[in-house]
Image (cartoon, rainbow, N blue to C red; front, side, top):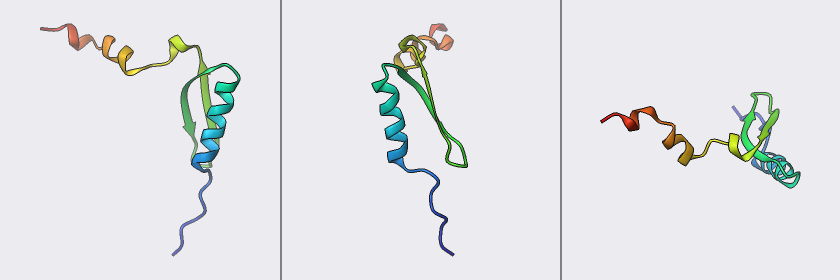
Length: 64
Protein backbone atom coordinates (compact mmCIF):
# COMPACT_ATOMS: atom_id res chain seq x y z
CA UNK A 1 0.00 0.00 0.00
CA UNK A 2 1.41 3.42 -0.93
CA UNK A 3 1.79 6.23 1.56
CA UNK A 4 -0.49 9.22 1.31
CA UNK A 5 1.13 12.44 0.10
CA UNK A 6 2.44 14.62 2.92
CA UNK A 7 0.28 17.48 4.07
CA UNK A 8 3.25 19.83 4.49
CA UNK A 9 6.90 19.96 3.56
CA UNK A 10 9.94 21.15 5.46
CA UNK A 11 10.24 23.99 2.94
CA UNK A 12 6.76 25.20 3.93
CA UNK A 13 7.81 25.44 7.58
CA UNK A 14 11.08 27.14 6.62
CA UNK A 15 9.27 29.76 4.54
CA UNK A 16 6.83 30.49 7.36
CA UNK A 17 9.62 30.89 9.93
CA UNK A 18 11.68 33.09 7.59
CA UNK A 19 8.63 35.30 7.00
CA UNK A 20 8.16 35.81 10.74
CA UNK A 21 11.85 36.64 11.21
CA UNK A 22 11.77 39.02 8.23
CA UNK A 23 8.87 40.82 9.90
CA UNK A 24 11.14 41.53 12.87
CA UNK A 25 9.58 39.04 15.26
CA UNK A 26 11.23 36.25 17.21
CA UNK A 27 9.99 32.69 16.76
CA UNK A 28 9.01 31.10 20.07
CA UNK A 29 7.69 27.82 18.69
CA UNK A 30 6.28 26.12 15.61
CA UNK A 31 3.28 23.78 15.65
CA UNK A 32 2.07 21.59 12.79
CA UNK A 33 -1.41 20.07 13.02
CA UNK A 34 -2.29 16.64 11.66
CA UNK A 35 -4.08 18.30 8.74
CA UNK A 36 -0.88 20.18 7.76
CA UNK A 37 -1.77 23.56 9.24
CA UNK A 38 1.44 25.37 10.24
CA UNK A 39 1.27 27.74 13.21
CA UNK A 40 4.30 29.90 14.05
CA UNK A 41 4.14 31.36 17.55
CA UNK A 42 6.00 34.68 17.67
CA UNK A 43 6.89 36.83 20.61
CA UNK A 44 9.58 38.90 22.23
CA UNK A 45 13.07 37.47 22.60
CA UNK A 46 12.68 37.35 26.38
CA UNK A 47 9.73 34.95 26.11
CA UNK A 48 11.67 32.44 24.03
CA UNK A 49 12.93 29.53 26.10
CA UNK A 50 16.54 28.73 25.41
CA UNK A 51 18.59 25.95 26.89
CA UNK A 52 20.47 28.50 29.04
CA UNK A 53 17.20 29.86 30.46
CA UNK A 54 15.87 26.36 31.06
CA UNK A 55 18.98 25.41 33.02
CA UNK A 56 18.72 28.51 35.22
CA UNK A 57 15.04 27.87 35.93
CA UNK A 58 15.63 24.30 37.12
CA UNK A 59 14.85 24.34 40.87
CA UNK A 60 16.62 21.02 41.40
CA UNK A 61 19.97 22.62 40.62
CA UNK A 62 19.84 24.51 43.94
CA UNK A 63 19.38 21.37 46.03
CA UNK A 64 22.61 19.99 47.45
